[in-house]
Image 1 (cartoon, helix red, strand yellow):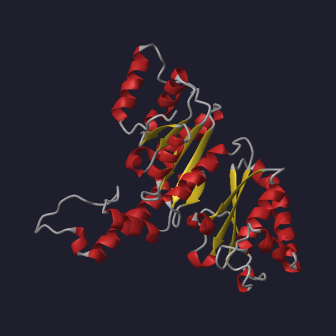
Image 2 (cartoon, helix red, strand yellow):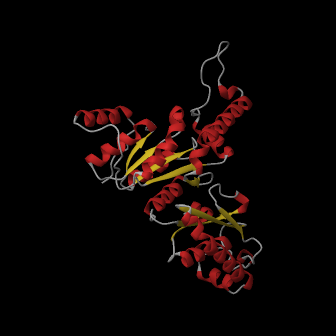
Image 3 (cartoon, one colour):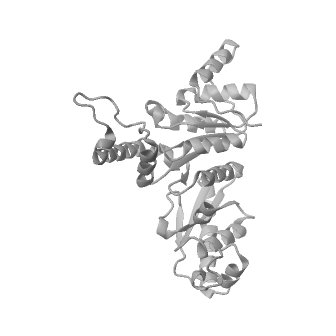
Length: 331
């Protein structure tokens, strides 16, 4: 059963008040629901889409919960139900953000399993989205000024500069939170892709390192969420074989062609050896996700084959997720 998302903080506050009046404590160690996902990121990067995806996956979602209420809210949820919880926190609570990271660390030391997901996008993509929706950025200066009334779109140069400044300020305010989160680059993702990627993240085993193998096309830019980037454009390209051009790296004829190339076998072995050597270090560093991006020219043949093959090879020793940025956009 899907539980409606709560955007109404008055409802949350009322529930907390009822709980306190019933004898609940407002402080002390938190006892959280089985799964807590914190969704944050840059305005315009897709937090609403991500929350709706989690809602469809059975999470109870609360948007824009002030960090000061996080502990009490988790306590309330544990007392009243065992449903999974997703909470969105962003720059609208800018005054409370300095307190969020210490609170998350404290909750984790108390045994609360919190997965923090940070949605990001390039500045150009964010500017385009704000221009299309005509919604103001949360940090934009929309206060009326003396003088003749003038709309921002009347001066597009000044409007873009103000928007870019607001985005860069937001990046600065959220920088520390991004460093401790699993990052998803939504610059070129359709809403359906983002929903699928979010569902994949919450299905992954939270108790071990998850390897994310992502194929992409260099002509559309390197993913912002990549921890490692491998360039396979130097390898033979199936695109230049007429019969293989309309297929992709998941199709058997393309895979057979690439398997027959010595350079492909050698590079696969080297990437596998590198990751195998350093995975224990990442696990010891308590990393939850490691994103390995593999790029070729079009994101259709070589990079897809590498992502699929590496995911199979590492599937037994780690949790694995496979993403195909360009292919998924066509589905």
